[in-house]
Length: 180
Image (cartoon, rainbow, N blue to C red; front, side):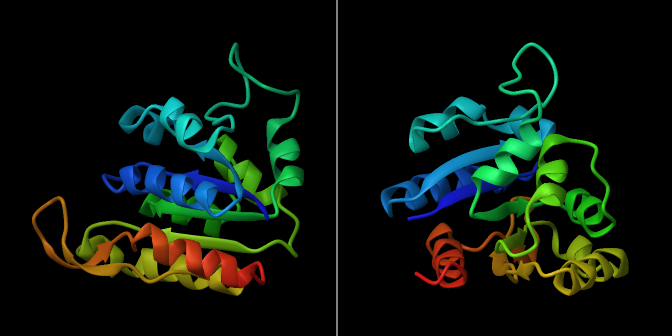
């Protein structure tokens, strides 16, 4: 099975990332979560550790750091990167090569031959914004497999596209890219 890096950014859908970590672990993959600071405010990284049996990461520097260069070590460890949920902010940073946190530096350090999947989750109006669509296009050009959001009622009460796909679907797409 594979070593999977699971990135999660700030979205109400971050609870589904915990479920995804659990499902991937149950399928035999080793999963290490890498959360943005804001995502870690919504869900405790220890929850990812509990469902995966692997360490979860938020910061590269400071008292809780795990290695001298976590972004390089994680990128070497991972066979693939799946980012779910991906906020509009994270999409923009990744599309433009900005690396100002652990997740974005891991994404840049990941070898180009390793599969990378990204699953946006946001309000429908944000999703169709020209800047977001431009960033999604750039990510596709850069080799990311972009999963289209599901449609339905979102946490804000709006109805339309923007829901994070179900964890089982994300896992299936990732495993197909890994050739499993």
